[in-house]
Image (tube, rainbow, N blue to C red; front, side, top):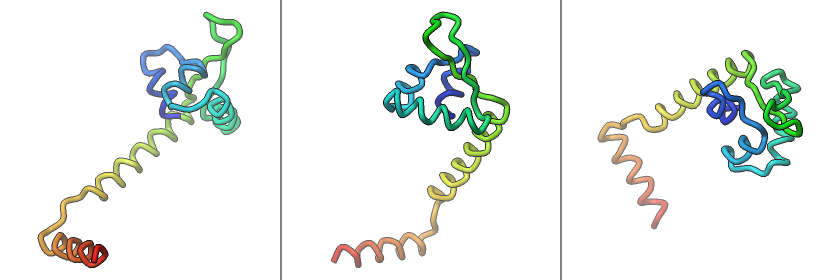
Length: 102
């Protein structure tokens, strides 16, 4: 979903081959994922105006909203994970690591 949004950011919807390349997945797997996202109303597949054999993928408004919620959740988790720690917490973590190494 995020890959489809990123590829379509300039208004030109990607096809499944482009989406698979962006996501680093096989076209068949991408097709299966796209079918599930389409069934949930998060994306829509349409005929590619440049290639009658291909379909392009457009993110629906529901898909864009779901992706935005996911982005917010991931950014919050990222911020919490990389939150600075005070000296006492750092010493405690280092002691724990040192104990596990021994």
